[in-house]
Image 1 (cartoon, helix red, strand yellow):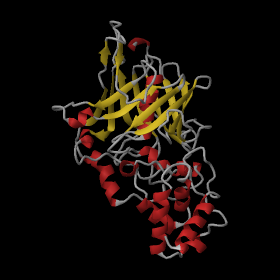
Image 2 (cartoon, rainbow, N blue to C red; image 1 turned 90 degrees about the vertical axis):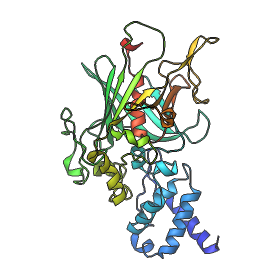
Image 3 (tube, one colour; image 1 turned 180 degrees about the horizontal axis):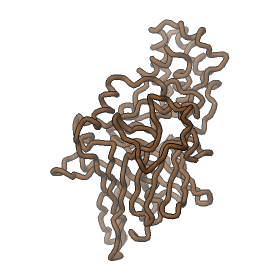
Image 4 (cartoon, rainbow, N blue to C red; image 1 turned 30 degrees about the vertical axis):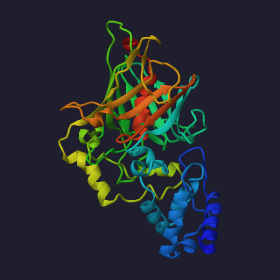
Length: 392
């Protein structure tokens, strides 16, 4: 690498650490006095692209990936090039920006995460695993607060670990259960795809209308329904669950299939992270066609079901192969695969899309992949925490 280019990259990395405001959430760059647009915007495009490509390639894990986030917040030209270079999780297997948790996971493998439960505060925190260890510190992604109602239970999901209220600017969505804890509905705070309709049962009165971008309406949009089979006979065995993903067509898992991909956060979420110019960018024509596909096609929705375990005679228990990612037996443990609702099962129906299991008293692994997002996977796993007397 030429000395001049190496010097520029080193200078950018050192500056980027000063523009990150919060390392405990999905980090967002804030333009400081040392990073004014007039100084950096006139950098030659060829040199700028080369610098950003090298930074994106070298800073591939957290916390070093702060430098990539910082570069996206310098100015319009930097944001535009960074948006082109940084690929969505589906193709890069990396979570970089806040919007990444709303986008489908990797196609080729499971993305490793874990959830920490706090019994006293009834909160749950989702982290991205940084190593192969089951006990690393992780990178904070999302948080949820359990709220009991007279006839249901809500899990409010937020970008902010300290504010999980529905009126918060960091509100992402929620999970709601019925009285028995056997049926759940996942709501997104913004449209999961073009043409999505707001739920009539959920009011958006908590949203500060002055903060919402007119291009990204906020409210509560149904993205999935989860149901657990009743165990009326009291038979032994793991819970049986079904998850209908209303926002994802069944064809998404087929070769060449496409899942709707959100490309921006609502303005109120952006303000929560101080300013994320990358997330505020307009969707490309390609993403518009992806998002609109579900609204135009009369396709059946993707249905996930738990993979059937096998009975181990020597251990006298039900077993699933988690490839070392689960270490403690629990009725909460599960693996979800696609259910062949309208035809014969193919190889794509054997691929594990989401797996969840216990590794400590209040620590659980959560591994997910395309076509679901980290937000959807987190909400599905939260349903497993809820008490289900009728299903045990």
